Length: 131
Image 1 (cartoon, one colour):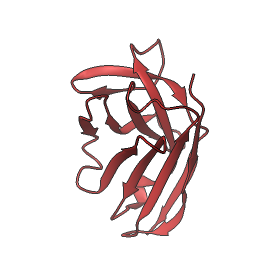
Image 2 (cartoon, rainbow, N blue to C red; image 1 turned 180 degrees about the horizontal axis):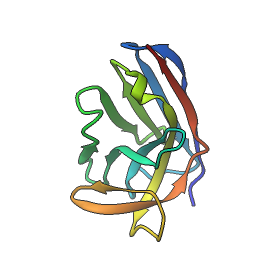
Image 3 (cartoon, rainbow, N blue to C red; image 1 turned 30 degrees about the vertical axis):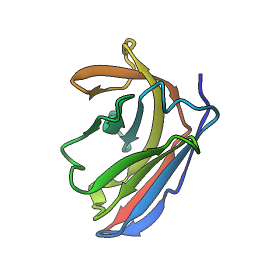
C-alpha cells in the first residue's frame, strides 16, 4: 500500500477557503485513482471528489462548484482546494489512493460511473467551518 499523509486542515469562517494536501510515499498518480473522503461526527464516510487514471474527475453534488481536486504527478501530491466553505463542510477529511472493487463495509464512491473502494488511506485532517 501507499503511505499517504494529509495536511492543510484548520478552522475557518463560513465563506473562507482551505487547501488540503496529500503526499504519497511513491508515485501512484500515473497508475491509480485518487480520492478525498470526509466524515463528520456520527456520520458515514462521504466521497467528496475523485480523479481517475485518465484524469476524469468526479465531485459530490454537495461540493460541486466549490471544491477542486488536482494532482501533481511529479511531486506525488494530491490537492483539494475548498472555496466558499460552509459549516456543513466540517469534518475529518481523508485522502485515499489505489481504487478497486470495494470490500464489505469499506467506504466507496462512484468514480467514472463505477462504485470503487480505495486500498490506501491517510490519517485524516480536521476541517472546521464556523458560521
